[in-house]
Image 1 (cartoon, rainbow, N blue to C red):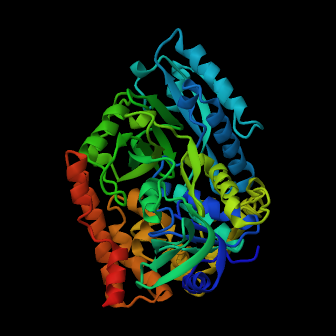
Image 2: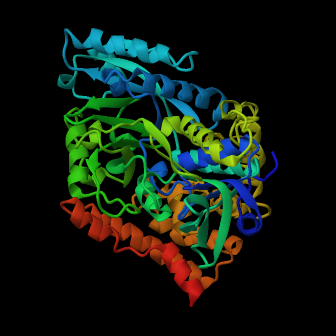
Image 3: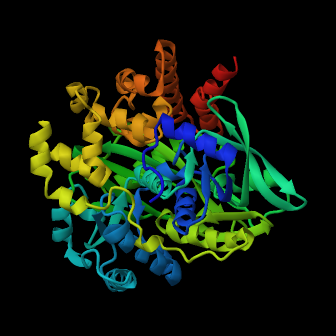
Length: 572
């Protein structure tokens, strides 16, 4: 490795200096999982790489998924065997080699409702599902009687099933995983920057030769030169292509997916659930001390930066999950709601649920590659395809992708650290479950996180208003994980925004005071960040009371954008 996995203020300044002074082989635009994976893929091939993201890393789709690494059972039913096989192979790599510290098995119950034909039909599908991924990395599926299924999931009504099938997939904190991919790319020499927006492309005739990048925090601009620019902007693919000029080879439509978050004790179950709906499938997935329930699948043509969940979305999820629960959920049970946009390849159907989840990569003009579509699970394959195509413009031989064998930062030494959890708990005066939770978030970097406390023992205590998180995690977000705003800390570095009844507002002031000295904030800036975060939460809550998407969008975009506030302040 030739770089640093630390992404603090000093590293941000150094990255901006590199953008001004270096010429790059690859400039990646978009800091979601596909862009992050592309930067890592290119860097590990020995290329000079820069990655820029207009907002925060994983601030779009890559922090708002169902948080599963899976093959997709319903794609088997659609006979899309290649997509399932590819995704299951990637799931195995993540579990066993690339990110064992971030990815863990999750058991899921498939309730059977038709006593005669459904069991052999679903069972045959699960045999394929269990075998197509190659080497065994998860338990084989099991057939369950109605009694056996309800023993694992007492919450389900007896009349809601005749039996069940238990299978396993894998779960990941998508935002933390994406950030870890970014940090790994940095460790291999990539210059990575958030709050860095491409405002124009540079050309030599029809060839794209780089981009003009604006620092959203200060308003400064720099011209970045690169042999090839990779457009990995997800639902913004068409907009970025238009900015570059020329015509794209494919188009992207945004499909909105909404999830609700409820307390774990509200639904007594040892396993997750997957349910068929009239449009798609619905998951109920265990998430720390909560359940995630989702998702919807509807067309979205409004603000791409801030997709809003409406009352209709929430009611849809409640209605479908309550069809099988003995004790129905109500809106009062909901602690969090989040909405994300899937970038689906357009032109195949008018229904977003029927659009392709496969990815496409194209070179619409010399010096520009676009990558879109796909699944979170297959980000690494998408990234390799993008760099392979971009090699056309680099002008020299480019090695094959090695990322199937590249562990993410925190993976090396993870298994040994798991065995040291009791010693770490004793050394830092923390309960074992707290250390276990940290190791599951940071892997072998856990000691680095804990050492961030220094002599300030208060940072080793849980946040009063977000008890699952330690103060040191808040500090580490600013010192090592590229957090620039309070929203970055509470929404993506931690998940307080969806895991606490107040959506993180009660913890906001304390979190802002922790990061203030690390980010150079004065009292006014602390107050502004706290107020902006509270306004965002208020706007999201109001959007969830609106009847439809149009009204929900109007309510959501009323919140101040802290990054726009930042540049306005800088230009005063």
